[in-house]
Length: 556
Image (cartoon, rainbow, N blue to C red):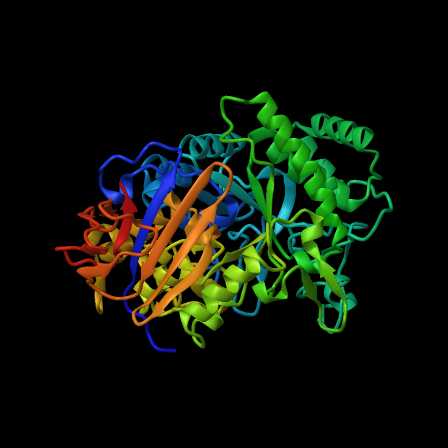
């Protein structure tokens, strides 16, 4: 498709809230209500984001002997909290942070054919009941959630219930809990669910209702750590309260929801959803819902709001066009939204942007989300991630378009760490490791230059778009309506009982004289969020003096 180089966004903001103060656009606090349908979710791998505690960089005999970008690199939970306190996420308009699984990972390394790989990414669980010390402690996680809430940010934990970590000399098989084959062939539901994703990634028997004993290696571990009696007592209480049999999936549900009950985690991003029986997610959500409600009841001063627990799922290759039902190869169709999910990750946006004009995408997404199958549901859009080997702009040449498209597409938006700083997605490594380099703080601090832009300039662009989006729920959650083709323009409107919001968008550079849309009144003062320049509607037109890559106009 043809490149759309620049956007002009013009908005009117009306609500029962008081007007925002006239400060720099990127530092203004939003008075708009939070809506998951308009969330801006920042996804990061803790080990790759920010190292605030070098004392926990190596544990369990792990070494720096992995293949390129496959060893632990030192990032930790404290590093995330540090950046929250510095205002990094608020300045970016981020209102939710999704962190990779934090539970204790296998201690050993796996030879994947590309060399040794460690569980720095968090998806190779050894013990669901505790955190990996490379990431941090329980106190660190408590501080992270508390700090996030103090900055009006929600925390999403990534959870894995499909598989344990790989088997190594230090990491025994969970006997009686898992299958070790066959490998999935994805021909139908059966060969997608009752199978292992890859060699040496044991698949948990999530379909089973048969009681199993706790693995001896786990009991020995707890005893060595001095918490065996505590863990067993908590399990007795859980199974007595719920009436569940002591089958593998129910142990996991207990262990995973403990993080909500203890810390007030706001939601889950759920991994490998289509690789388990659908009902397990409804059971997980039921416990999660009760856990967060109880935490909010017990911690009224720390809660952000009264919203219920939130779950977004990863069904690999799910598209917004699938609507409520995902169909496996073969003919099995399942409605995972009936199992506690509010949203699904949308895998199709990056491909569509290479084939379609924006309005075809924006209009269809808005229709599906507001009038179609997904009304009162949502999708989480992304353009790059930790395991997508074909991101929208791996070479970081379309950096402004990446921000514009991602943050303006109807639905929630997922920023992958470093999208906003043009962190390269083609590092010198094999496979998905090339997507997982350390956050490029050095480039941002030094304002490194690329062809056509500087790192600080693109970062500021993301900040302005992100804070504008955070201030205006109509961007992601509103109804889209095209205004004209030349220049391409549209409005987004959102109306509910207590809040109205409208956004006008024109795609063109440095517009100085524009016709005011109907959402603006004659004589109304407006402000460009991008530059803070003010103007007034006179004779149905709005005029500006300053050049602006984007005009983000807010009613005064």
